[in-house]
Amino acid sequence: MFLAGAYVVVATLGSAVRTVVLPRAVPARLGSVVFVNMRRVFDLRVGRAATYERRDRMMAPFAPVSLLCLALTWLVITYVGYVAMFWALGEGSLREALTASGSALLTLGFEVPDSLPTTFLAFSEALIGLTLLALLITYLPSLYAAFSARESEVALLEVRAGSPPSGVAIIERYALINWLGGLSSIWGRWERWFVDVEESHTSHPSLVFFRSPQPDQSWVTAAGAVLDAAALTSSTLEEHDPDARLCLRAGFIALGRVAGFFGIPVPSDPKPDDPISIARDEYDAAYDRLVAAGVGVRPDRDQAWKDFAGWRVNYDAALLALASLTMAPYAPWSSDRSSRFRVRALRGRHFSHRGGPRRRPR
Image (cartoon, rainbow, N blue to C red; front, side, top):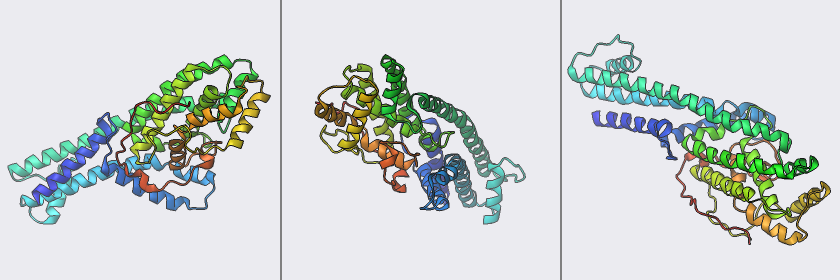
C-alpha cells in the first residue's frame, strides 16, 4: 500500500515536471488524459451540427479550463497517494488517513502527526502541494507571453492578407501598392515566428488550443496563408526570393513537428508529385488573379503548377490536420478542406519526425 501510494505521487510529480519545467517535447500521459476527456466534454456541449460561431464561442475556454483541471488533477492524485501512505503507516482508520493527508496538502494544520514517519509524510506532502501550485503560477505567465507573441503576428497579417487570410491575397495587396519587394519582410518575420511556434507549441502543447481573440483569426490559417504565399512566390512569380524558401522550410518543419507531437501521421519525406488538397483549377484561378493584379508570373504555367505542388506537399497534410484539430475558422486552402480529426489524436503519442531537408521541387 505504501509503495503504491509513493509511486502515484512520484509519477504525478514527473508529469508536472514534464508539462511545466522540461524544455523539450516530451508527452505527459496524465496531461494527455485530462485534455482528451475535457475535449470530449466540450465536444458534447458543442454538438455535431453547431455553427462555427457556436463552436468558437464554446471552445474558447477549452484550453484554460483544461489547464485548471490538470492542476486540480495533480493535487487530487497527490492527495490520494498520500492517503495510501498514511493508512499504510497505521494512521488509524481510513477517515483519519484522509483527514491527515488533506490537512498536510492544504497546509491547514488541524491534524498533528503523532510519529516521526507521519510527521515526515506531512511535511513532504505540504512541500509537494506548494510546489505544484508554484509551478502552475510561474507556468501561466510564460504561457501567455508565448500566446501574445504568436497572436501579434496573426493580427498583423490581417492588414496584408485580409480576413480570412489567403496566400494569393498577400501577393495581390503588395502588387496593388507596387511594393512586391516588401514581401521579403514577411518571410523574415514569419521564419522566426515558425521557429518560436515549434518550440513553444511542443514544449507547452496546450498553446495549440488557445484560440485567437478574434473569432475569425487562427494561428493555423495564418500559417497556411503565409506558406501558400511563399510557395506561390517560389514557384509562380518571375523573380524568386530565397527568403521565401527559407520561410517555407521553417514552416513545414514547424507544422510537421507540432502535428507529430499529437500523433498525427505526417509524411516525413513526401515526393513532389504526391497528391495535395489543392486542385489544378484552384491553382489556375490563383494564377489568373495574380496576372490580373499585374504580378509578373512565369509563362510556363504547367511547370509553375508542378513546382507549387512540390512545395505545398511538404506542409499540406500537417496544415489540414491542425486546422481540424483546433477547429480553425474558415480560410481558403486550409480549414475549408480539413476533415474532422479524431479526438484520440490528443493522446500525445511521441511521433518520430525527421528535421532534415525534405524533397524540393524539381
